[in-house]
Length: 81
Image (cartoon, rainbow, N blue to C red):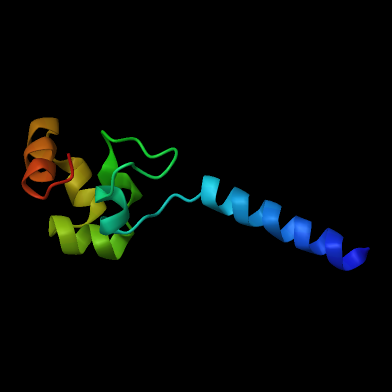
């Protein structure tokens, strides 16, 4: 029936949305096990702009302009490593 088909389509869309999710809250990236597909070495890239700025106290482009060792020290100090 049509209603059965549309509910299956919604389930597929939900599953895809979860798999394709690219932003997580600070709590989600600190949880273990990590959400599927999240790179444990790049936890900061999954934060929303607001969370990123709140947690790391700078914008993403400012952070990306830092030398790698400085990024790493900052991530460690914020528990993102």
